[in-house]
Length: 359
Image (cartoon, rainbow, N blue to C red; front, top):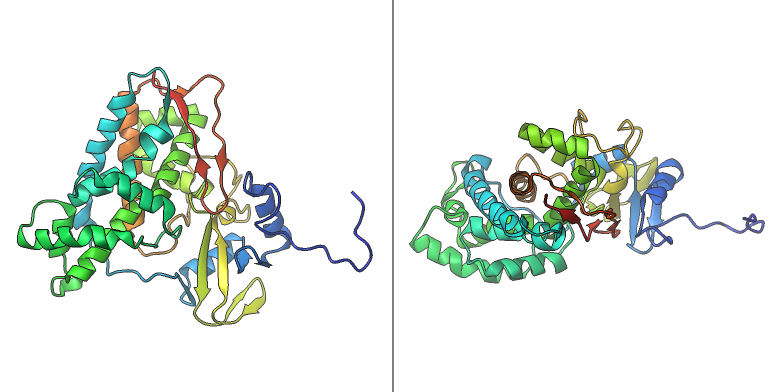
C-alpha cells in the first residue's frame, strides 16, 4: 500500500469503516492503541474505547443518559414474580422444541423468552408478548430507554390492579413505596413497569443469544455449568463482558469533562464503546477468550444504573432460567453439524441464527 501524498491527512478511523459492522474488533484495537478519543461524524459523538475512560464516563457524575430513571424498587420485592415467570416460560419454550431434530434457538427461544417472561411476571395477557417484543426490537437501543408505546399498554392494567391487586409484579409495584415514602402514583408505577418490559426486550434477547453461543462454542465449559449451575451467573457476566448486546452507549456531558487528555465542553456527546472496553488488554488478561472462571468480568452491558437496574435484573434471571430449562430439556445440546454462529451488527450485536441439535 503506497503512502499518502505529502501533506495529505489520513482520516482517523470511525464506525463507518468498511468491515466494522461484520467484525468491529480490529477497529476497536486501532482506536484503543492510537485514537483513544476521536470524533465520529456517523454518530455525531466522541468515541472512547479504553476501559478506564469508559468507566470514568459511565460511573462518573459529569455525564448522563438521555432518559431519566425511576425510583428503584427493592430486589426482594420483585424477584420472586420475575423468577417464577421466567422459569415457567423457559420450560414451556424448551420442551416445545426439545423433540425436534434441529432447532434455531434464536427464532424459537432467545427471541421470545425475555419479552414473554416480563409480560407474564407483570400479569399482562400473554398475547401482549409479541407486541412488547416488536416494540423493544424497534425502540431505543440504550439500556435505560423506554418505548413510548409501553405507557398506553400499561395504564389500564395499573388502574385495575389498584382496584383488585393480585400476586403479580404489577400489583407489587403498585404497593411498593420507595424508602418508606407514600405509595407511588399511577405514573410512577407505569414508568417502573415499563422499565421491566424494556429489560425483557431486545437487548436481553441479543445478550441471551450471545450467551448460548459462547457456551456452545466451549463445550467443556458448558459441561461444567451443566454439572454446577452455581456457575451460571459468572458465565453470564463473562459473556456480557466479551459480547455485550449494545456495544455502543451514548452519554451527554453535563459539565466539562477531560478524556484521554483532552477537555470536552459540557453538552458533548460521548460514545462509550463498551464492546471495546470489555476487551481492553490493559484491564483483562487474554481479553478475547471466554472464561467462566474469570475473577472479575466487570462488564458495562447495562451501563451504570446502580445496584438494582430493572433491565439487568430481568436479563440475569432470564439467562439463568433459560439456560437451566434448555439443559434440562436437551441433555445432548450441541451445534448442528457444520454450523458456527456469525454475530453481526455495530450498535446492537449478536448471532441472528443458532442452529443446534437437542440430543
